[in-house]
Image (cartoon, rainbow, N blue to C red; front, side):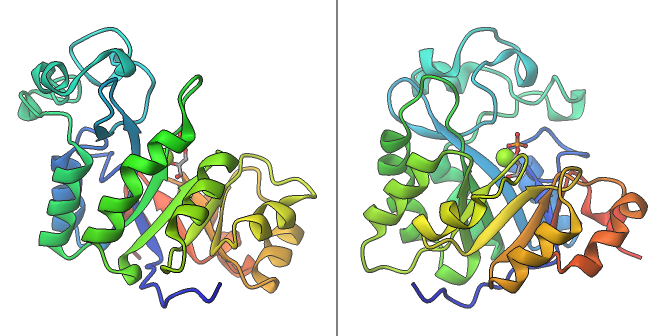
Length: 246
Ligand code: G3P
Ligand code: MG
């Protein structure tokens, strides 16, 4: 599939500007925008009632004032939790963002998104794609969206559901094994998203020479990361991209 010309920047804010605001919230995206970052990486998954929301964990405890599982919440219950005060008092009352709200904000701010289809254990990758893909394709132009996942079924299903419409997909890897190319070809991937600490130069070169964009997550130490730019890395996903600005 020919890929659209994506305006992929060198620096992407991981879960929004998560070094300075509660991750995956509207505040974290506004903070990224205020810091001059054009793209954010965000995680999407489904509540128990099928509403797509921006959230990373399977559980609530780390990033809210509640305990329990995300999949046990409906939207009304999700709205009641505080997704900001765990990070700091300034964010008390921050609400969990729905995908719909987040897309409206990204549109308003003219920002791009690497939306990670987050398939936590026991969740249905196809249901996630069915709920999340149409609104993303509707809200954002092809140049400002990139969907990624560790989950091959989610990527396969997204490719199938996009049909003839242009969709750029990224394959997320922890370690990148020898069969990386097969995984990318299977979904006509646009990009490879690598754990920067596990990426090695020969593999990076193979990937970029094969024509894939190469993104690295989650790098917060520019000096340690530096040699990798020469390997052909296109973009870094960081909790605090400003650290990478000379
Ligand atoms: O998409 C890059 C990165 O976000 C993948 O790991 O656990 O932070 O979602 P995680
Ligand atoms: Mg992620």
